[in-house]
Image (cartoon, rainbow, N blue to C red; front, side):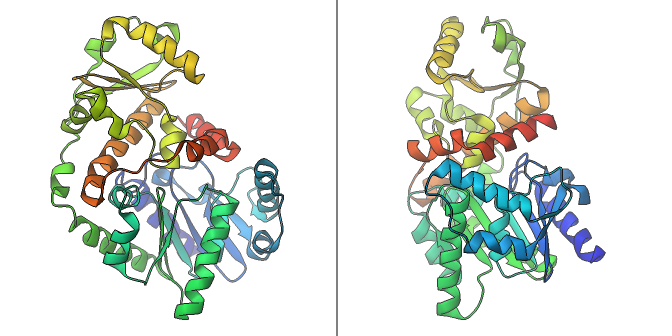
Length: 372
C-alpha cells in the first residue's frame, strides 16, 4: 500500500510540475483499492503534494452519490452532493476532496490522472474537437461534450462509461472532456505516463507549428511602462507581473486580435483569471478605464492587455499574480493551437456564469490564495 501511495505522489508531482499539463491548483489524481480511494484535496497544488495533500474516502459511501436522487435546484443539489462527499471522508477531516472525486471512483482503474494539458485543450477548445478526437483515437476513447462541472458532469461521464462498457465489454483509459481536460486511467503509474506520451505524440503531429508555439514565452518586463501610471488605489497597491512575448504581441496587436482570447476556454481560466479582461488602447486614460471595468463587473481587472505592448497581471500577492499570468499565457497558447482544429470555441456566457457563481470553485480560488 505504501508503495502505491508513493507512486501516486510521484506521479502527481511529475505532472503537477509541468505547466504544459497543470497550472496552480488545477487537475487531480487518485489511487484506489477495493474499499478505499486516495484523491487530491481541493485547491492543493500537485507540484508540491505530499501524502497530506490527499483525502482518503470510503468507496462504499462514495457509491451513494451515484445511486441517490438529488434536488433539481442546482445550488441545493451541489450542497447535498458535497455533504455526501464529506460523509465518505475517512481522513483527514480538515480537507475537502476534489469535486471530481466521484468521477475518479467510477473509472475502473487503480490510478487516475486528470490534467488540463495545453496541447489537449488546444483541440478540446476548438470548433472541430469531436471530429479530431474521433479521427486520432477512434472509438477506443470517451468524448464528453461540455457539461457544467460537478454532479451533472459526473452523471454524464457515468452514462458514457456505462454505454462504452456495454458496447466494448471493457473500460476506456482515455476520457476527453470538452473545454476542460482529460482523464487517464491505468493499473500502474508507468502506464499512465505512457498513455499521456502517446496522446501528446498524436496531437503534436497534427500541429505543424507546434514547436514554434513552444518558443513564445521569452518574457520581458513591461512594468517600467505600467508602474508610473495612476491605476487607482487598489491596482496601484496590487502586485504586478508583466509579459511581453511573440504570443502576447500577437493578441494585443489590436482590439480585434484580442477577441481570440477575450473569453475563457475552461473553468480553470475563470477560477484564476476571472472571466473579463481589460484591453487598453490609450494608457493616458487607464485609471478611468479600470474604474469603469470595476463598475461594470464588480471587481478589479486581474489582467490588463496594453495595445502593442503586452499583458500585465494584478493580484494580492506576487505568487497569485504569477498564477494569473501563467493561466492567461496558457489561454493564449490554447487559442493559438485551436487554429489548427477549426478555430477557438470559448465557453458560453451561461457556462461562465455557472463557474463564476459556483461555491466549489470559489473555495478552490480561496485555497489557492491561502497558499500564496
